[in-house]
Length: 31
Length: 518
Image (cartoon, rainbow over all chains, first blue to last red; front, side):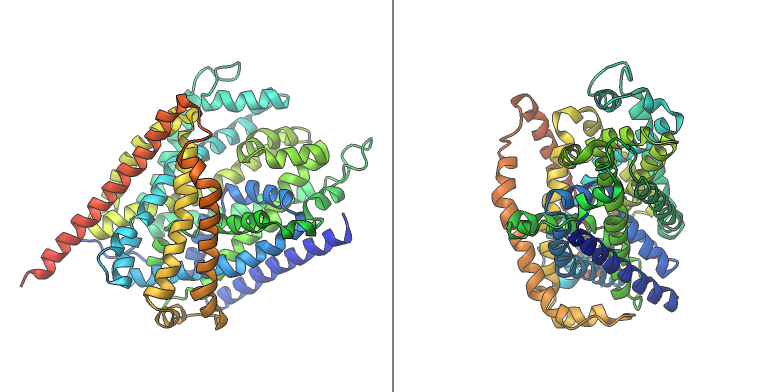
C-alpha cells in the first residue's frame, strides 16, 4: 500500500465516520 | 373513506428505515468493484463530489417533497406532484414513482430470496459440497433452475425460498409503517451493522494467509483497493461511474423516500434526517463494503484474480467467489453464512421499502384500506414475479433492471429536481426544507439544487442515452431466441404503467366529482 493509498483510505474513512458521528450525535441530542 | 395517515414512532425509526432502504447488495458488491476498476483511491474524489452535489441534494429534495405531500394526504408521487405543480399532467408524470419501485420489487425480491437460500446452505454446509469455482458456478445455476446438475434437479428449492421471502416481505407491510417497517428497521439495521463489522474485522485481520506468497497480504490488498491512480480522473467514464454509484446507492430517484417521508409530521425535521440516512449508507458502503469483498479476493486470488473478480459482475462476486474464499478460512461456513445473512438483511430492508409506495397509492388515492391494498398488491406482484423466475435465463430480469432499476431512476431524479427547484420555486422549496430543520443547511445548496444538480443529472442522462440506451432499446446484444422474452418484459412494464395511469385518472375524476357536489 503506497502512502497515497493510506492517505486516501484514511481521509475517506475520516470523512464518512465524521459525518455519521456528527449526524447521529445531533439526532440523539434532539430525541 | 381513506384511513387516518400513520406516522413514524420516532426520528431514529424513520432514519433507520430510509438507511435500510438505501443499504442493499450494491453497497457490498458494486461499490468495491467500481472503486477498484476506476482508479482506486482516486475514485473517491469524483465519488465524494457526486455525493455532495448529487446525493445529498436529491435526498433533501425527496424528504421535503415527501413530507409536504403527506400534509396534503398524498404518500406517492402522482398526488405530490399534482399538489406542488398544480398542472393536470404532473400527476401522470408522477406515475413513474409508483411503477418504478413496483417493477424493481418484482425482480429484487427473487434475488433477495437467493441470499436467504444461500444463508441456509452455508450454515448447513451443503454449499461447500461445491469445492471449486466451476462447481460453485454449477451450484448457482442449478439453484436458479438455469441448469439441471448434481446439486439441483429443478427449481423447487429456489421457489420455496422465494415463497418464504415473499410472505415475510408482505407481512411487514401488512403490519403497517410503525408496527411493521419501523420495527423491522430497528432490529435489522443494527444486526446488519454488527455482521458487517464482524466480517470486515475478519478480513482485515487475515494478515498473510499463505506464507509462500508474502505479497498476498491484507496490507497489499488494501493498497489494491485504495492506491490512487490519478490518471483515471481525466477519464469521463470514471466520473460517470462515480455519479452512477452515488445515485444507485442512496435509493434516490425511485420514489420510496417520498413515501417514507410522507408519514412524517408537519414540523418533523427532514434536513438532519436525510443527511443521517445518507451518511449511514456511506458508512456501510465506504468502510464496510470497501473492506470485505475485494481485499478478501486479493489475499486469496492475487491481483489478477481480484481484478477479474471485480469485473465479473455482482452475482458472480457474491454467490460464487465469496463462498469460495470463505471456504478457505477456519469456521468458513459460519462466515459464509453471516455473509449471506448480511445480504439478506440488506435486501429485505430495501424490498419492503419498494412495496410501500404502491400500497400507499392504493390506500391514499383510491381509499382502499392498507391491509386490503397489501393483499391486492401481493397478488399482482406474485403473478408479475413468475416470468422473472421462470424466464431468468432469457434476460427477463436484466431487462426489468435496465428500465426500472437504471433508466427510470435517473429520469425520475431529474424530474424531481426540476419540479422542486424550478416548478415549485427554489425560494418556496427552501422554506419548506427549513421547516423543523435541526441543522442549518448551507445557503449555497440553494444554487446547487437549482443549477448544479439538474445539469449533473441531465448530463448523466444524455451520456448514458448516447452510450447505453440505444443499444439496449434496439436489443443489439440480445440473442434472437430471447427477443420475445425481452418484449414480454417491456409489455409487462407498459401494462402496469397504463394500469397505474388509469387508476390515477379514475381517482382524480372521483375526487373532482366529490368536490363539485354542493
